[in-house]
Structures are given as C-alpha cells and as structure tokens.
Amino acid sequence: MFLRILRHEWSTLRADATLWVVAGVFAVAIGYGVWNGVRWVEFQTRALAGAAAEEQERYDGLRQRVDDIVKTGGQVSPFADPRSPSNVGGRLGPRYAMLPPGPLAPLAIGQSDLLPYYFRISTDSRENILAATEIENPQRLLVGRFDLAFVVIFLYPLLILAVTYNMLSAEKEQGTLALVLSQPVALRTIVTGKITLRAMVLVGTVLVCSGVALALGGVDLASPGIGLRLLLWAGAVAVYGAFWFSLAALVASFGRGSATSATILASAWLVLVVMLPSLFNLAVTTIYPVPSRVEMVQAMREASDDASAEGSKLLASYYEDHPELATGDAEQAMTDFNMIRVAVNDDVERRVRPVVARYEQQIVAQQAAIDGLRFLSPAVLMQEALNDLAGTGTARHRHFVAQVDRFHAEWRGYFTPLIFQRAQVTSFDDVPRFAFEEEATGAIARRVGVSLAGLALPAALMGLFGVSRLRRYPVVG
Image (cartoon, rainbow, N blue to C red; front, side, top):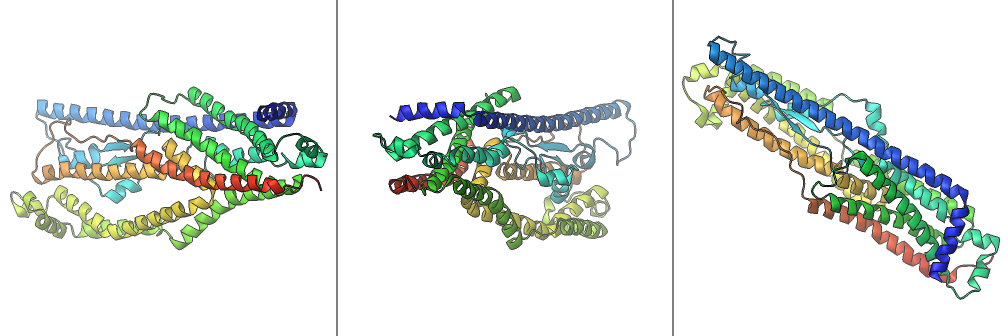
C-alpha cells in the first residue's frame, strides 16, 4: 500500500506543471549560488597567489642586493641595508600569513568576505598587523553574497512548504480524502507517503544539483577529510528538510483549510528564518556592545606617539626585562634606532592590550550568546553548520588568527636577538615561513553534529506529535 501511495503521489506531482517550474527555478538558483561561490574562491585564490608571488619576487631582490654588496664591497644606507635584521624583519622582508579557501568554500561564502584571509607579518606590533585589511564596499559586506547556503537556508524551506501546505487539506476540500480512507489504509500512512515522495524529490534536487555544481566548480575531492565533510553536508540538507517537513505535517494535523495552513507556515518561516536571527543579532550587540574600532585605532596611535617620545627610556626598561640582550656599549645602544623601535613596539602592545582585550572579550561574549540562542532558530543552526563544513565560519578564522599570533611571536623572536647583537642577515633561507594547519576534521564534525542534533530533535518531536494528532483528524467538515 505504501508503494502504491508513492506511485500515486509521483503521478500527481509529475502532472503538476507548477512543481516543475518551481523546481527549475530552484535548480537555477542552486547553480547560480555555487557559481557565485566559485567566483569568490577564485578571487581569493588569485589574491593569495599574487601575495605569494610578490613575496617571492621581493626576497629574490633582497638576495640579489646582498650578493651585489658582498661582491662590490659598496656602502649602503643603514635604512636600506638588506642585511639589517631590523630592515628585513620590519620593512623589507615581511612574510604573508595566508588562510587558504576551505575545502567546500564554493558552497558557503559565510564570513570569508568579511574576515581578513591574509596578514603581512613583520616586527611591528600585533595590533597594527591585524588591523591592516583590504578596502571593500561596506554595502556589499552588509548585504552579503548570494551562495548555495543562502538558497538552502532561505529558499529550500519555502519550496518544501509550497508543496506540503495542502497535502491533506486539498483532498479534504475536494471530498476525496474520505473516499481514500474508506480503503484499508491509515491516515498516517498516507501522510508518510506524501512526505516521503516530496522529500525524495526536493532533497534529491538539492544534493544532485550541488554535486554537479561542485564537480564543475573544481572542488578537490582528494583533500583530507573531504569525504566526511560532504557526508555531513548531505546530512545537514536532509535534517534541515526534515525539520520543515515535520512542521508542515504538524500544521496539517490540525485539519485547517489550505489558506490557513499556508498562512501559518509562511508566518513560521518568517519568524524562524528572518526575524529571530535579526533579533538575536540586535540582542547580543546591545547586551555585549563591542568598543568602537575608532577608539582602538586612536589608542594605538596615542600609544605609538607616546612610546616613540620615550624611546630611550623604553629601551632601558626593555634591557631590564631582557638582560640577556644587553651587549656592548650601553650608551650607544640607547641611541640605536633599531633597538628603540623594538622597545617602542613592545610598549605599544602593552598599552593597547587592555583596549584590544576588551574588544576581543566582547566578541567572545557575543559568540557565546549566539551559540546558546541558535537552538531557537533552525536557520542559525544551519548557517553555523554549513559555514563550519565549508571552512568559512568564525571558528576556522579564530584557528587561523591563533596561528598568526604564534607566527608573529616566532618572527619577532627570530629578529629581535639579531637586532640587539648588531648581526647581519646573510642568508634568507632561515627566515621563518608561515604554514597554515587545518583544524582537525573531528573537531568540525563534533560542532556540526551538535547543530544537526539541534535540528533533528525538534523535527522528531514535531513529527511524532503530528502523527499522534492524525488519529483525531477531522476528515469532513
């Protein structure tokens, strides 16, 4: 009987031209979303390749200049000397710390267009390095980019609700439901068959179109952990669909008319997908306001000016904290510009640290609040899961920034002793390089699993409650 219901539903849906038009538009939206994601990834890849090429060309030039100085024995200005560790570490030889696009980045642009994906690492203060970002259109950053995640989160539920809102009410209004139930078949079997067929069509459309778009987009299927990410992506699409199918079944179980059911479901979509995420954002930014970035920049500027004015005192204090670096004539060291610059950068970081710490604490508090509130909105849960799987969320970026901090400390730890020893850089092979290390796939899977559980539990509860209510469904009237 169940297979007969599936065949009947397939015949009915196949004969409905509206479904095919909507499905075609949906497939086009999926294709455009992935294409837009591929374009963004290509832009990032070109930018990172350009940065790497610029760095390589710069280092080739430094090597050539050092060779020329050694061969000719010529004099060079100390501020342009390519052998000076202060010049190499600060102005001439910075290296890029780059965050490559995530394995499934074409599927969800996420926060990758908002968060910086490369930094130019030097002996400058941490805050100056992390504050340097590309200029971008603020309106585009506010609106965001159209991608597959947007299609899945916003349009996918609408299509589900469009084909399920009247799955029982239409037959009831036409007078055919009572005739069907006069046969040896339970109402819950009919509902299960209707939902199963629609789920197979819609979920299959999303997954097949996504797979084709991924293949055309050149996603590296040999990258580590890609299989698990794809499996979790498919699971997320299925569970998110199950949530909306369960909601439709629950509303249908109350026996309301088609117009009433459509209004209820549309209102639920509006609240859960549009209103609640906006209210969450408003709430967390009000409760945990982030200090003005202008205030942080002003604090950095003032700290830099004050530290520069007290350079000699700062160098003396730096020697007290690092006596192992004090060599040679102390009076001459006091006036050495490069040494004073190290002390100035160290003092700027110390003075700005309270402002930066307050800024970062509020960001962490906001994220913690969102992590708690996300279980009230399936859209927020789904966005977090898709961003995590695509490698375009805040978690991967925090992982990247932590590595940048360690590399910055390694960079300064390499050049600072050379500066104080008045040594020269004669080989650039030992200069530290940055290599991004991906987060463990297991950690990502655990975070995504929590989000999927947050979707699956209410979906199961709504489904069970809806099925139990079908026993009291008003077949007529």
